[in-house]
Length: 405
Image (cartoon, rainbow, N blue to C red; front, side, top):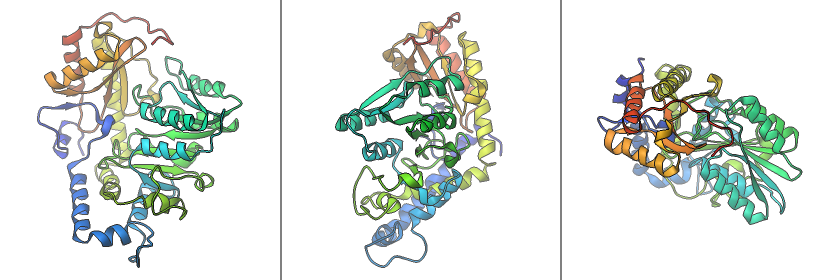
């Protein structure tokens, strides 16, 4: 399978679009969209039988033969992530998964949740709400820049206090796009008695994932980003000894019937996204396998980031081991430093140049986060580099002071 621009025919992009933002909400291949529609059509031929008797362990009449369809799909997804299906449930997205953990977690007044300065905003707000409801607090640990694995681990470990009960740790950070030293961080935290909720929003499909080996208590991750599953689809994994107290964000028919039943039976909703997940995993294997796909995407993100830094005369200072399939590069100083300036440039690139790329303000600069997928090629990176240079120019490199906002 030859990756690059020829693969665009397998997706449904508008003609002329340069799409360097696969990571934000994902993009689903045409073939998986067709699988999803076939599942929807099948449901419509007999909705009650599928929805009430085939999806989950049911109390709505005699179940059909074989495992419930959500459980069968969960088994295949779990195998893809190195886990057991009985420890994994589907949720809509990682925000839903994080809410389930945070709302279930036994916080008391005065307890503390740790998050990093790189935490995803939706997860941060869920933590703030859960803490506020119980009289607990959320403390943000600033991550030292430039990012180095050992320094990130130490920052978390040093922040643990006598009332720290839970830490939220990213597997791949959202805006800064670094592969976080999750396993090492979790080991240090759990040695101090702190439970760990891992945010794996960008991990499945972009890097190899073996959840049980990470040593975390909970792991939630999107499938609709890098695993090509139709949106929205995500998973929540819990260690066996953490499942009893865990409840879904929506309480419904599965209450008190066990971990899997509670999450599988949350009322009427379209299950076709989750049921399409095995087909998406199979397509990855058909197109050369996850390793080949991840290698192509990593190489393009890594070399593309250096190309952009060279063109913009800035510095890309991230070790290769901390780069997955995305990379974040500082723009010239002339691009500005505020969120408003970042959004204005992002909009201009989209609506005037046909380039979709994530941009944000961080450490006194505007940064571009590129996502590399098998339909991208270096010419996409070059087009972005030229468009930004036309709009803001290219300046001399300057030192980015650690801790500066």
